[in-house]
Amino acid sequence: MIMRKRGDGETGTGTQIGVISDTHGLLRPEALAALEGCTQIIHAGDVGKPQVLEALRVLAPLHAIAGNIDDKPWATGLPQTLDLQIDGVRIHVLHDLKTLAPQVQADVVISGHSHKPRVHMHDGVLYLNPGSAGPRRFSLPISVATLWLGDGAPRAQVRPLALG
Image (cartoon, rainbow, N blue to C red):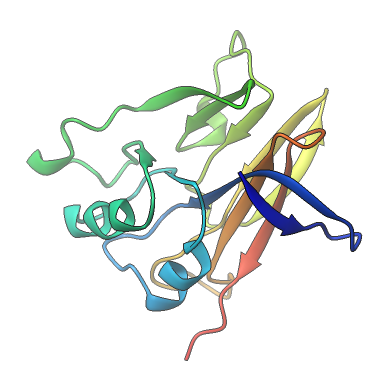
């Protein structure tokens, strides 16, 4: 359990999960710094290289799935989707939100693929796409996200990375 500051200025306790996607083999130092202090990390696919997973595992326990570019032998052990339960919150992780099965029961759905960061609620489910932390695509931002659990409803925030 960690202390953190909410966006409204209140302090609360909860589990802080770092969410990253679409690294495409590039794990920037700014992304590592943004994920430091998280109790767990979720990678929503398009990892690109096994070294990305190794570096993330040094920071915190890691949950990772394969994306459409993760077709090399090192990635054969990565699942296509994950269903997690953390602090009583059901989290479904998949790479491309367009492939979400209608029968999925989740409180939070995490996806990647589009490189477009987004946090929104739909029918009581929190949808989170952290954007891409890897090579820039078009004019989209480079970003990761933070998901907070355990102190009220799940909350998420996209964190654009200031590249140095």
